[in-house]
Amino acid sequence: MSTVSRRTLFASGAGLAALTLAACGGDEAPLAEEGGVTTIRIAATPLPHMQILTFIKDNLAADAGLELDLQEQTEYPIPNRLLSEGEVDANYFQHLPYLETEVAENGYELTAFEGVHIEPLGIFSESLNSLDEIEEGAAVGVPNDPTNRGRALALLAAEGLLALRDGIEPTEATIDDIAENPQHLDFQEIDAALLPRTLSDYAIAVINGNYALEADLSPAEDALALETGEDNPYANMLVVRTEDKDNAALVALDELLHSEDVRSFIEETYSGAVIPAF
Image 1 (tube, rainbow, N blue to C red):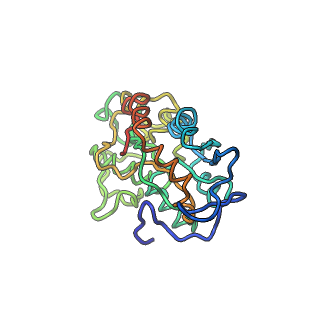
Image 2: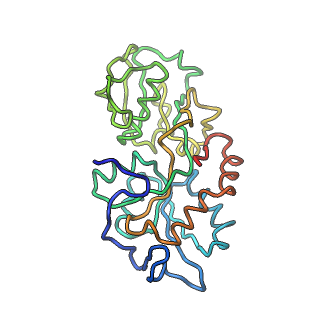
Image 3: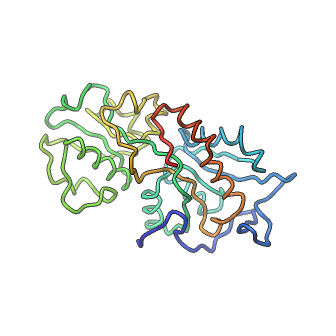
């Protein structure tokens, strides 16, 4: 896949189902309106995405002339399919490397706005208090989707548990790209959403921040190691179909996601488990 910008992925021929969209300043009508309020249907995973959107829905959307129809999803592949098929108008659950992989594999014509927040990936354990305690041949759980798998392997490499072969990009790394495994760890891939529920099956597991929060794990307090937020390419963002990227209502929603009110909400609510990316 060619290099992809956050605001320009591909040209699209698909429109929002049952809705008429217009570019900012265009002659067409914006999303369907009732009484001057524009409704946007959004698919999002529960934490923190749905919480952030609910905060906007309850506190900021009305003043911007928006009504948010929030549709919760718990599995990563579904929101992009819903968006591509016109079942929703936007989604909010993913970072750019994941979106690029989805687009390359499925031919979706989607565009990402700028990053809103980062959920640091963490290494968790129910049995260990330190990575120094990990034993020879221990089982290690990692996400099975390509970008989060590579991200997890990069974190494990940063902690000295493995080394990846030279020249491999972290977002492309697979188990086969492990060049050094000094403790002969047994790396097992599983759906990212299942890792918190199966944590007891592993000596350690690398878990996405949102799924850790859903399982009442605090990345800031419970993780044995945590990704840094500095220069982190995995900021989560609002995604729309490419032909709708300039729609006034969707742009207004993205502006709310990047508002100081949302920044304060993230900082006060998640205590470092979720970090603003703007």
